[in-house]
Every structure is written in structure tokens, then in C-alpha cells.
Image 1 (spheres, rainbow, N blue to C red):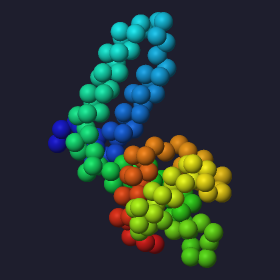
Image 2: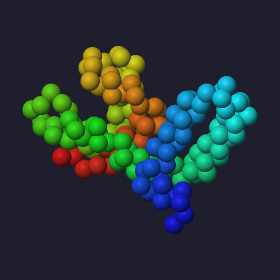
Image 3: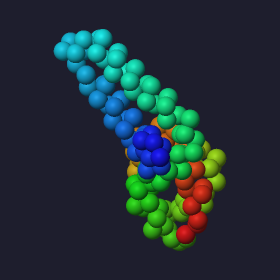
Image 4: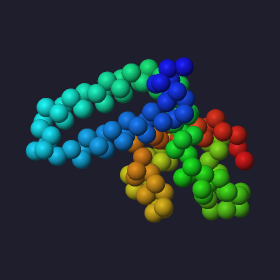
Length: 136
């Protein structure tokens, strides 16, 4: 199995891509010069393109990787709890609800904070993971 395939399988490719992008944002252009920043951005873009063909297959794995924060509260959710269970939830509904929290259309500060840190591809990956997970 190639390096990129292993990263996709372990859910680390997206984390590495984000880390590289965060490092790019911290580059001081006056010290590095715009040429070095452009080269580094090209390397990140190429590595992202190399893994994008396998990204669809990796969505559930990325969702599993990102799910620990969700399961902190929702993993212990009981039917009589105010915290709803999310395992086995329909993907479309999951995406709609998280995007509504991100847009601050739904009133829950904890969920607004969590959803506010997620990008669309993160939400889609979480939706795929939790839709495939057996209800608890």
C-alpha cells in the first residue's frame, strides 16, 4: 500500500493537508519571499490532488477520525437525554443540522462552536461516518 493510500486509510491525509495549510498561513512573506510561498502552496495543492481520487472512499475514515469530539457527548446520549443520538442518523439530515448550527440558525452554543470549526468536507465525512454507524 502506497504512502498516500495509508494516509487515507488512517484518516491522516486531511489532517496533514490542514497542517500544511496552517503553516502556509504563518509564512512571513517578507522573510521567505513570495516565490518560496508559491512553491510551498503548489506542493500542498499537488499532494491534495494526489489524494483527492481516493478522498471519496476515505470520507468515512475521515469521519471516524473527526468523530471523537462528537462522541464525547453524543456517544453517551440516552433516549431520555436532551443530547440526541447521532449514530445511524440520515446523512442529509445530519448535514443540514450541522450547517444550521454553523450558520447560528439553531440555538445551542456548544454545537455552534463545534460546527463553526468544521468545513463542508468535514461535515460530509462526519455524516457518512455516523450514517454508517449502528444506532446505540
